[in-house]
Amino acid sequence: MKKLIMDVDTGIDDSLALAYAITLENYDLIGITAAFGNVDQISSQKNALTILDSLGRSDVKVYPGQMGIEGNNPYVSSSLHVHGPNGLGGVEFAQSKRKAEEISAIEFLSSSIERYGTELVIYAAGPLANLAELYRVRPDLVKKTGKIVIMGGSLFVRGNRTPIAESNIYNDPEDAAFLFSLGLDIVLVGLDVTEKLILTRNDMDLWTSDVGQKFRHMTEFYIEFHNRCEPNAMEVCFLHDPAAVCYLDHPEYFKTLTLPVKVLLSGYERGRTIASFREGIPETTHFCIEVDKIKAEKAMKDSWLKLFG
Ligand code: BDR
Ligand code: CA
Image (cartoon, rainbow, N blue to C red; front, side):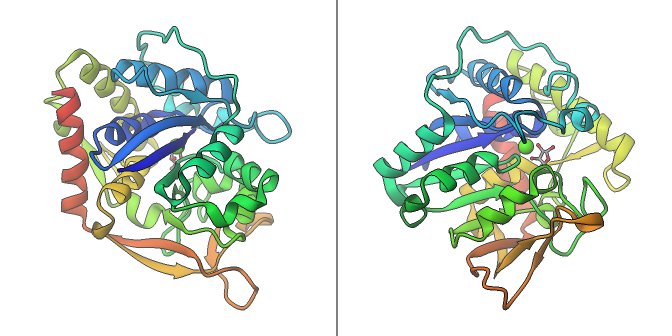
């Protein structure tokens, strides 16, 4: 069984991804590292603790990550309408009595890589400040790291934060560029596939348990956002962060291209991910370009039904 650490900027689809991940039989979730992004760092920690407790996983610890770019998170305001005032669609889950650990995300990631080597898989579904800081502080760990699966970027489709940039990458492009330059074994699960995977209100009809109803109300907020802002997604929501968990669960459902991925940093193209050859960027990033929609949606929906039915 592989060990799994999830780095999340705990918003709505991050929470759906956490729920899916705890049902995986081949992965042992050993900790969450909090990222800023959809919410600020402190709210990200609190939401992760709250969601884990609501799912009966109070045994999983949460580790504090980077506070933000220059100590703050300039992106909260732009995600309020996406993930709601508390990052969980405004839904009040029972507040966790737990606190994040004293040990930082960077220390936890470092010691876990040292302990488990390539048996450890790292999942990231927010801006990439924690992972970038990890390898800045501990460049020696690049060679000891196994697979990293990231929700982020877009290759052949438009962006969602700007017409050409995906939100997680746009929110911290310098750190993403640094990470993709290191030669790590990275899988990018970006908008090319995540926007093919959707959830409808009907899919949630059987989410009738107490926690299921909370998740349903939270996800309805996300569907409302899609109604307002995503012309190609009426009465549904995209399954961005859960799609990257689906890659962990069923990599055979995805087709990838292995490319040197560059993140553009200036002007209108800031945050765009492109393939750029002959610049010395390592060709170690596997960009997902196709997904078996029927099988992937079924895997996700079956997992939630187990928890919420
Ligand atoms: C990504 O942006 C965030 O708002 C979501 O949680 C997801 O990680 C989608 O572009
Ligand atoms: Ca996210």
